[in-house]
Image 1 (cartoon, one colour):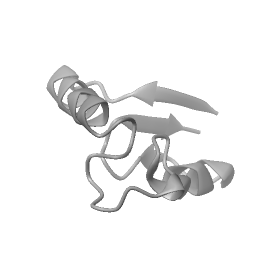
Image 2 (tube, one colour):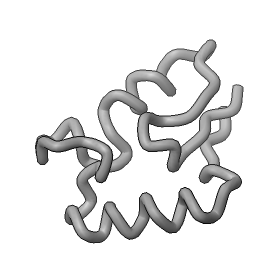
Image 3 (spheres, rainbow, N blue to C red):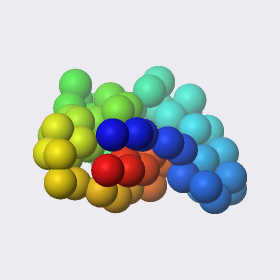
Length: 65
């Protein structure tokens, strides 16, 4: 398993700027809950699945098999 940043630098820069503005909370989510702190619970749950390969919700991270 390997987790990497999205290859599109513009997306990475935009999401990281949003994370900075929201104090580490996912900029794609409205609620500031513990589950939405980057790396969000949704993606942590997805990467726990050995068969999952893909992007997190905001497309910052990509999990390779």
